[in-house]
Structure formats: C-alpha cells, structure tokens
Length: 256
Image 1: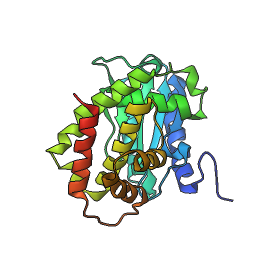
Image 2: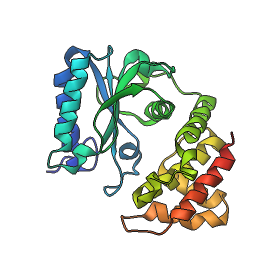
Image 3: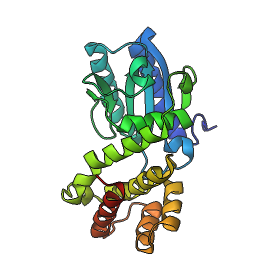
C-alpha cells in the first residue's frame, strides 16, 4: 500500500521521513519539532513545479558543527535518486527566533530548493512564513505549531509583503536575470497575485485562490496572463514582457 501520510504523494512522504529521521539524529535533544506548510498543506501542490516547504524548530541556536552536519545531510538528499531531495526548502529556527520576527544580525540555517544550506539573518519573508505556519502548519513531529508562534498582525503582514516586494521583486523591473526562465515567470505571476491580495485583504491565500481573485478583481488585461500561470505544465511560453509589465503594475499598487 502506498503511504498517504502526511501527504497524498508517496515519494514526497519518503523524502520527508528521511529528512525527519536524519534531522532528529543530528539534533538530538535540541530537536523540538518539524512542520510542513504551504502548497502540500493547502492542496495547491504541483508535482511539476512545487517545492517542499518545511520548518524545523530547535531549543537553542545551533553550533557550527551541527550546521555543517545538516548541510552535509541536505547534500546527500539532493544527490539521491529522489528528485524531492533537492526540492526541500526550509528553516532551522530556535524557539526565541521563531516566536516573533525581530530584525537582527543573528544568522540561522536556511535552505532554498536547488541550493546548499546556508546561514543568514532572517528577512521579511519569514514573517510571511510564520503567518502561514500559524494558519496551516502541520506537525510531522513535536507540539502544535501555535504553541511556538505569536500570531502575525494584519499590518505586520502587509508591511512584510511591501518590504519583500521592494527588496526582491521591484528590481526585476530592470534586472531581468531571474525572469529568463519561464518557470520563474510563472512563479512571479502567482506571487504578484498573492501579494496584491494580501495588501488589500490582510491575509495570505493559496496560489489558486489568489489567481481566481485576480482574474475577477484586476483589469481584463491581466486575466490571460494569470490564467496561463495557473495552468502552466512546463511548456515554453513567450510571456516575458507581460510578466515584467505585471510586476511593474504591482509596484504601482504597492507604492514606495
């Protein structure tokens, strides 16, 4: 029988089990819990385009040798036969840093899909991550995630979306390096829909829900672009200029 826990995808469940087993072995008594959130939880997951969003909570900041062991473990998973080993994207946060977002120079391990584990200060995107975790986080091990988090206020969420757009997305209006890949353009279009929704409603919704809202609420000129992004299945598309225009439009809505 194929495993359907914690997700409907047996091969995803295999890599999650391998990750949890390895993380527990490396962290020992410092381990608090491991959590899943975003598309695998909301039902938006696409086997063609989605990654696996996870969070590991620990009691205390991690020593350098522990971070090195985690990095080596992620390297092994990325090089394994499962494609999902390289699609893992997540944070390792100690309880004080997880509780609420405080800008500081303290660094924390973080892995993005397709990249090596690195340590860096927390940025605005972790406010969005914490909001998602509060609303939808599923414990693979450990206590209920709401025991570890303070809820994110609407204004804090809107400010985080604003700052993330200004710092990461607005430069793409003139720097097109990321947008050369059609897959990233699809991601950009979906993200613009979600950011616009959050700014207007103070809430984060799934890609599908944000796209449905955008097609109903935004000008007709964006409907085809958004619909294409929602239904994209990996084919090449010539929508570069439209995508840049949509980011430019979002920039105007977000303001300075």
